[in-house]
Image 1 (tube, rainbow, N blue to C red):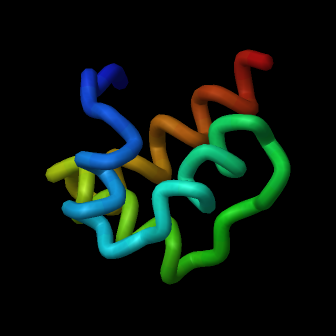
Image 2: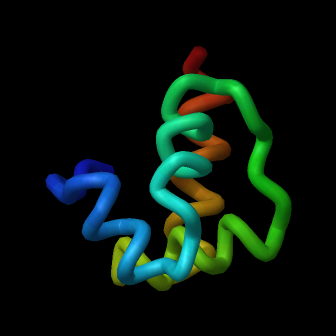
Length: 61
């Protein structure tokens, strides 16, 4: 799953703070369920597709 989008754009689309998005990318925070929903909305993807991508990421290392 790859979406080319700036942190600023994702911030605007998801209503999440750009700094928080940066921290997520740097593994400084683990997002909660509400954040994951907001990210799915911001990325314009189905929430369950996002969960599947996360599952595959951790399953395959």
